[in-house]
Amino acid sequence: MVSVSLYRYSLVVLALVAATTGSPVRAQQVTDAWVRGTVKGMDATGAFMHIEVAAPMSLIGASSPVAGSAQVHQMSMSGNVMNMGPVDQVPIVPGKPVDLAPGGYHVMLMNLKQELTTGDTVPITLRFRQADNSVKSVDVKAQVRALAGGNSGGHMH
Image 1 (cartoon, rainbow, N blue to C red):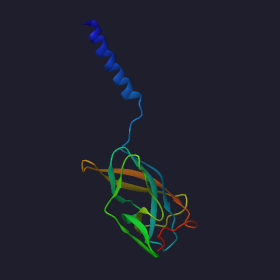
Image 2 (cartoon, helix red, strand yellow):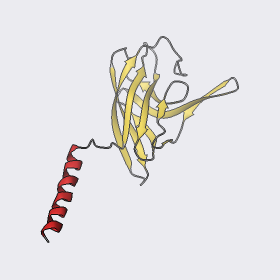
Image 3 (cartoon, rainbow, N blue to C red):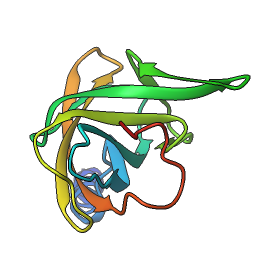
Image 4 (tube, one colour):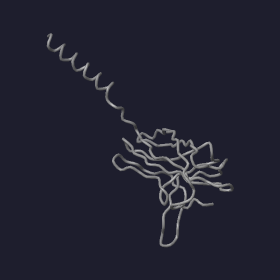
């Protein structure tokens, strides 16, 4: 009787230690978030980042206080024609991170309320639909990078 109780007690203690010392698993991790800088008169730009998930989910939307609206877009080439426009969702599965990058998926910030200068930080809220159809919001801080250089990703307006 004593050994069974001691065994159960040991299991409870081990479970508590594991629960308090292990690193928590986050549902999604967003890293390297950045926004292409703008110049006076530009009313739109792109936001880019790396997204990894622990469970299947989809990126379904975004918003930012620096923009009148924000949409998840995809840019693609068909022959010599560039196509860019909003998408309903970007599916993301564990083990297959998604890069929002110039020339592919990205967050389009439109009707900008201010010029975005290199070094500024832009708050962006991403919305993810989880497997149970619930929606979770994740706040991201994106660093503004220089407008010059690299692929514009179709963001010059």
